[in-house]
Figure 1 (cartoon, rainbow, N blue to C red):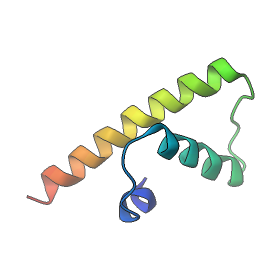
Figure 2: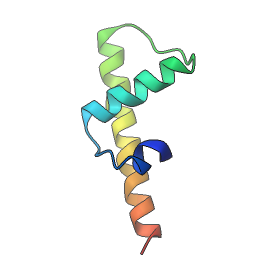
Figure 3: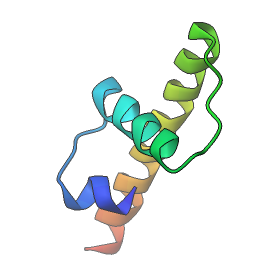
Amino acid sequence: MAELCAEDRKASYDTADEIIKRLKEKKNFIPSSVTVHREYAFVLLQEYRDYIQERSENDR
């Protein structure tokens, strides 16, 4: 997530898809089910938003 934040990526579903893509490249198991993929993207997006918020609070 630090890489994406350093790239100034906004918290969006495109970013969640990019996280999933990068995880797959690192051989992390991502189920192929569309429903599971959508839920996984939603959770990743929440985590990324939390990460961005935490970083911005620490920068103050």
